[in-house]
Length: 161
View 1 (cartoon, rainbow, N blue to C red):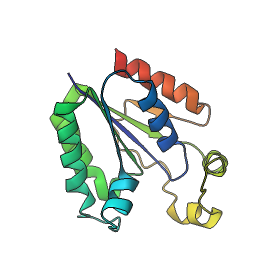
View 2 (cartoon, one colour):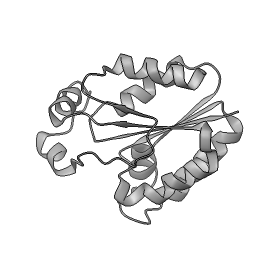
View 3 (spheres, rainbow, N blue to C red):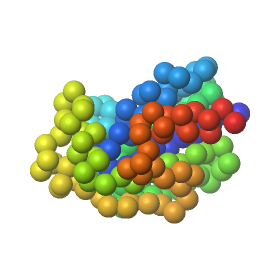
C-alpha cells in the first residue's frame, strides 16, 4: 500500500531539505512533488485560491499512488489556499496519509535559510511568514528542537511502519 507524506511549513524552514534527504533514504520508488517546482517552475502560476497548481499536484499525487511506494508532497501549502485540497487528500488516503508541519521559529527558519545555496532575503522571509499555519490533523509537528536529521529519521520510521 502506498504511503502519502505531506510536509508543510514556512519558506526556508527545512521542509525541502528534509523531503530530499528522506527520498534518498527510502527503499523502492518514491515520488517527490514539490509545490515550488509545480507552481513556479512548471506553471509560472501565482499562489492564490484556484491556482492551477492544485489540479496538477492532485494528478501527480494520484499517479504516484499507483506507481510508487511513497509519495512526498512538500511545500508551504498555506491553509488559506490549499486547505480544501489537503482535506480531499486526507479523505482519499485516510490512514495511509501522514501530515507534518514545521512549526519552527522565525529565527530557526532564518538560520536554516542561510544554509541554502540560494537563500531568500530577510525581507522576503518576513513578507511570506505564516505563523502556526496548522490544519489540525497533523501526524507530527516539528519544532526548533528537531534537527533536520531527527525529522528525517522520525519520518522514515513512520513510513516504514
